[in-house]
Image 1: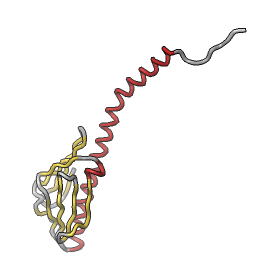
Image 2 (image 1 turned 45 degrees about the vertical axis):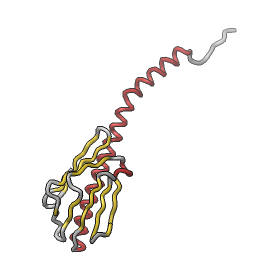
Image 3 (image 1 turned 90 degrees about the horizontal axis):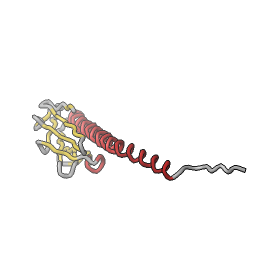
Image 4 (image 1 turned 60 degrees about the vertical axis):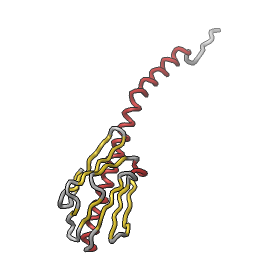
Amino acid sequence: MVRSWRGFSLVELMVVLALIALVMLVAVPRFAALRDGAAVRAAAAETARAFATAREMAVLRRTPMSIAIDAVGGTLELRSSGVVVLRRDLRATYQVGLAANRDSMVYDPRGLGYGASNLTLVLRRGQAVDTFVVSRLGRTRW
């Protein structure tokens, strides 16, 4: 009677574990970069929606709407007559850092931007960076 042993030897298991470790060594940084890029793109889209909302509300309400940019706190606040209408916390939601060359801008009742000249907002997470720009007319691009 011949016995047949089933299973893997220790050497075979160590080779498989070494291969898995090599694949993970290559794959994990790529996944982190993809995650960072997705977070920055989502934060840029959220920023674009906030600016579009401020512009639309200024036109619909026929009153100036301001957008306060808190780069340290990572927030955007839409205000009408000093009252906060909408607040977006990009740092808490997407873990992105903000850098801006201005701390605020205002849309007038016609939807034109004041203080928007050369307004640039940089969103960053890890190696992923995106720039959000507001034109003199209040239009946005990113």
